[in-house]
Image 1 (spheres, rainbow, N blue to C red):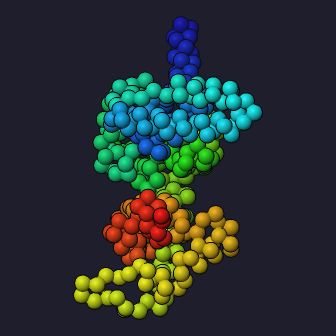
Image 2: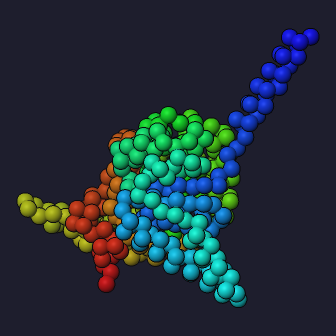
Length: 336
């Protein structure tokens, strides 16, 4: 009888342990690595929704600018959200800012956090080195997530020993305004981790969509080929060998006049015909031509035979000339 009782107790104990391990993680403490536009935006929405946040970057100067940017953004949100109660708006700003602390030491910032969201430079080696280091200091239950828009999540997860607690959380810019978040599940991501991140995303007031670890996920996989196909309209058609020769490079301006359609007409067509708020060339300049080229080059490296991932002569030429779009003053269009 005693043996049976012990077996029963062990069975109940094992079941309880399994049930506990299967329980979703309730994210309360968030560590955001990277104080740029995306990282600061993620920190802002996490703090504004009741989470305790540590924002990490390399220097105090960067973090000071990040905190100032968050404060300015919060004031804009408060002005709109609390239009009839300015005092409540001020309290909202103060309370949200009080939930954000900063650090230049990522190792110490992750030791007791529930979730680490990485939003640093789009470089696989740099990201992997960071995750490999953080993996040694983070708690067992801590979930790692990357905000990458173009790199393979599986490649990042493999730099750690917590592949089952690793996923993608792709936010969109500007984070406080954009409702969408892509939750990327690798073949190794546990259902518990995935569901915990979906719940976290909803807690931020965002709308999560799920996707497998495929190049570009959902939005960029559809958006980037669309943008590049618009550029190819400039590269096709009556492409005459004018301006070619020894020491003479191709003029993108000339391409725009001899291609299938002009950039102006393409932008107008997509705005008036498809209802898009911006045309593809306007959007390319807004996003940054170097950013788009980086994504396309990465995809081409992964799958060089895919016709959607082939390099663009016009795009490469503009990036080579440092005509990167709005941020440089000139891209497909010129900006004052």
